[in-house]
Length: 209
Image 1: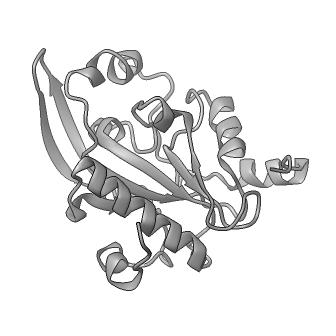
Image 2 (image 1 turned 135 degrees about the horizontal axis):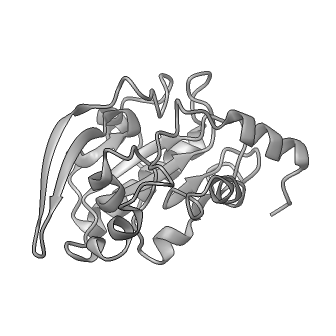
């Protein structure tokens, strides 16, 4: 893959707005506990959370650098799907969090549950301005179907970032207690108003797995 130009990096840095990234704060005291010891209490993927990058271009490598520079410990997502600008159109890139089966850092600090048990997939593009490409949608649907089959994730648990509810989490040595407070629609519009309705996703795209 060609190296990102300085202009691309600048575009990425300027484009990563809070509208898309309501991410866990890097100075949160419970960061280490949440993402190491306590994630082992009840491992298992239960959700798929879909994002857009809110940038015109990007790749897993570029986002990894951006997130690392912000103190998030590297790429926040598990997968990135390119749009042909910075990475090939429809290419699915695996992040280190997926390869190492680590929790993500792709949703709000108040939504730890969906960071720990949610697979974060980011499509490159700003879907407040335009729609994802057909190749991106086919790749996304193929990936999501495969993950649902492999991990027993129900279709109702395939959600957009804006649909992730806030939750209070209480830990003990054997289980996790979660109380959801509502949706964080006031904080983000991700994955954007031009992203297809997730409930209709499987009805409109039928690529083989």
